[in-house]
Length: 623
Image 1 (cartoon, rainbow, N blue to C red):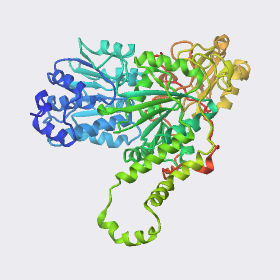
Image 2 (image 1 turned 90 degrees about the vertical axis):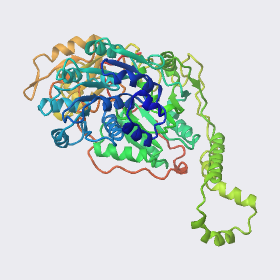
Image 3 (image 1 turned 45 degrees about the vertical axis):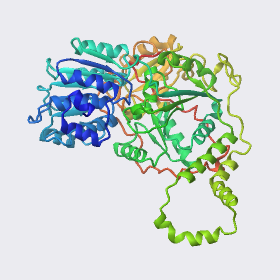
Image 4 (image 1 turned 60 degrees about the vertical axis):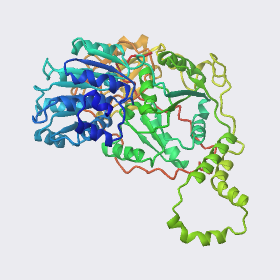
């Protein structure tokens, strides 16, 4: 008997998922489905990404809902558009042999009128991101009074992205007697609080150890000088000829810079970040899923919810600020029981971060050496050999050309032919990596990079970088002015200094957003700056300055993007998912042929370490 039938799933659903390749339930499915099918428990499921959580809650919902009734009976909340669409498509696929199943995806960046039209037609399951869902509720365009089940998927990510208030508002429109199912990869205190607030003695299921990584993932790190980072990254990619990976950066600017440099160097790559329109994002993801892209360069927010099969490598071009982010990044590979590699490219002063991640995951990282030019050439050569050996020959089509081919090669021996054929690609790498330098940084554990001294990387001040959660001499402040008020960083610096009567040299990082901004000032100047803006107006609007997050900033103001381009509610005004599209539209360049590196670019790599970093989302637990 089919294992899913033994779990209690009926035949028409099992037939549909069998066609999708479901043979045996994953551990989370095997243990959660029987519990959820009772429909009588609140539920907390802790499992890593890629373990089959969508089916774990999607299949029981299809069993428990009454599809003769055409009103919302289940609400699934998730953090990103990509995950929203993925869950919607999965549930539609699970139910394709059933009748009258209506599932609607509600997310920012798409036409709200189309989504409202689908809701009016009738829907039983709503899959939504919090921002757009709240917009539709505020329009009184949906009735959740008969909802039986609420699913909070990737709950830790929704809270990390600042959706706590939205979730509270949305759930306040649902009945008290509903059942709440919460799924999360990690269990920080914020998730524990939401479980306590909305659940009554939930059944808790933990797969593996809380907050640990997937055991099928190998974790490696490479230590390089900052100036060699991009060259080392390319060499790692070249050493893995069959790589199909996601490269994580902290900022949108960094993703664009790296993607553009890779395209110029002949790699199939493109960037994914919050400034892209939904159409642009869909186009990039379509190319990646079809494998016409080998490398997807992404920010944390943009890559959340991406579920692409057979990702071989996750590369951390920049380390994240939180353990949970590292867990989610590495979870993009080794999905559905497969294996994968998570690589971090760091400088010497970031060894402390690696040790903290190791402690959080409970897994030792392997210190790897940047391969030499000879190693890369050898790896590429045998990759070519394996491809030639395993290539499928279309006998019918090539037969007509064989006489001319044989005539062309008649003077060559078998050995000459093999050498020349293999050299077609091999010679390119040989030329590129001729006299290639050693890129491994000569550092010892626990010591500073001798090239930089105690200041770390060039241009960074002591106390402004370094360890996760490291103390800072600066306080990070929020101001309700931004680019829509025609401020750039220079304008905002002048405005702050003129009103606060402080020197511009004392002001730290300035991040200008759409309708708000962040800036840093020394702790000693915090009260002076806040007092100086009391009663100040800008174009008839009161200027508000507040300490960002929970009091003083004890960290860098770098890190990932703030949710999906939205903004901190404390800034006032309407927050919509998707935010402002600052990319200015225009047609995106398509990646080139993924051949060998461009020999003309040898030595012409750029150091991206000094690019502007984006503001780190608030309300995150640091480690």
